[in-house]
Image 1 (spheres, rainbow, N blue to C red):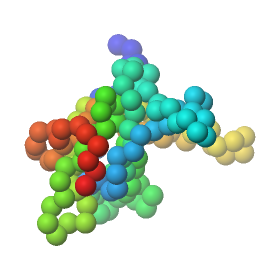
Image 2 (tube, one colour; image 1 turned 135 degrees about the vertical axis):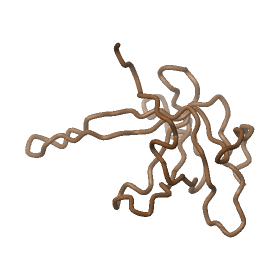
Image 3 (tube, rainbow, N blue to C red; image 1 turned 180 degrees about the vertical axis):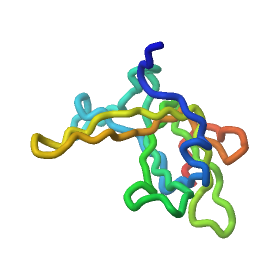
Image 4 (cartoon, helix red, strand yellow; image 1 turned 60 degrees about the vertical axis):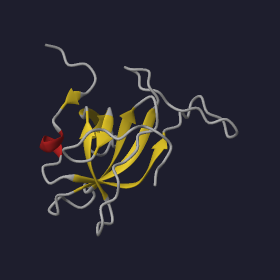
Length: 140
């Protein structure tokens, strides 16, 4: 069996202690097609949908330094809306749907060993155990 693209994973496998949204969901610019005056949103190579970026904090308090916060790309026709804030919490608890791990090699130059890295993509987000929030522009 050939694996093309990312490797589908369950949210709980990657974030067994949960995850939290930090900040807003932002469009990802296609730097090759964008100009200073005309930004063009990047699109997912597989689905053709616009790409969005959101910063996620891993709920695992023992996560290694530099690995607690990650950027996740979401391929969605409309801007994904994070779940509502919960009283008393500074972040929004979130569950990513359609989560995929994308392995890639970081070439660190001729004098350093290359390193295997991972990026994450999703098809949406929802409150933990809930239904996806409707897409829209309201980032609250």
